[in-house]
Length: 299
Image (cartoon, rainbow, N blue to C red; front, side, top):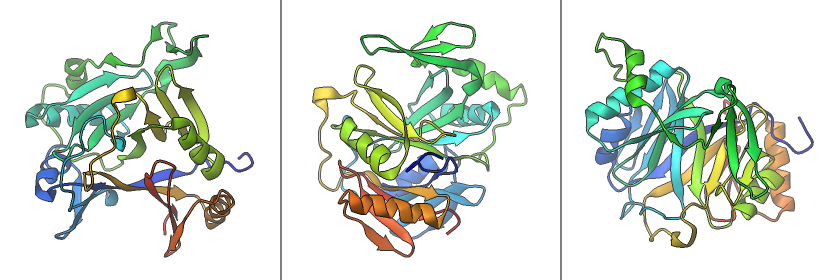
């Protein structure tokens, strides 16, 4: 591990989202995506997979998050087999919800939103198809497959072909796979360079793509390069979310040890970032106001 870099064991924990109506949100998160209920009261609903909390919904938002608002673009739940992705596609198809599907070469993804406008990605990683990334003198990014072909990473996914992975039984698993996990979180941004300085220079993530031409900046760890991402695709149309809108409440970064948490706390202090320490966790906000909680894994 390099000086100041987070361990490759660093992972994302529960993502907390504001919604206008918890029962309406559950029709997507629980009934269609198949997350299992873990706990619910009048103010929150926790959902997950394999007994682990992945998403926490918070009631109280007054309006859905409008498209092209600076805030959450999507939270990505990753599955570990293509068959699990096919089950998710089958559930989405049966739901009648509007969804989309893309082949990013490094992954295959399904996209949908809950009724509050919170974007959701269900993702299956396919690193074995990827050879290298090429960036032209103009800053254009091309993904080169192992067969030498070039891809934009934004091609449509062959959903009928994906569904054939389920065979002819007609059986569709009603629940998300038990080993699903939060793989990355993606926001719309105004100042991605300042955000990367915070996530890379202060927190200690490793930089990955940083391209204004492509319109995306991201960072992660040695093990997972794409964990926290920002896009500027809305460009001049980007707007601040209305007061009391749905969207991101906060997300969780789970660090490998108490020593790493202390080191990050020290770097935040040196950078003059305001923090709050609660029950062994550090709460902070990035330069655009996205809130995060840093904790030690297992605590």
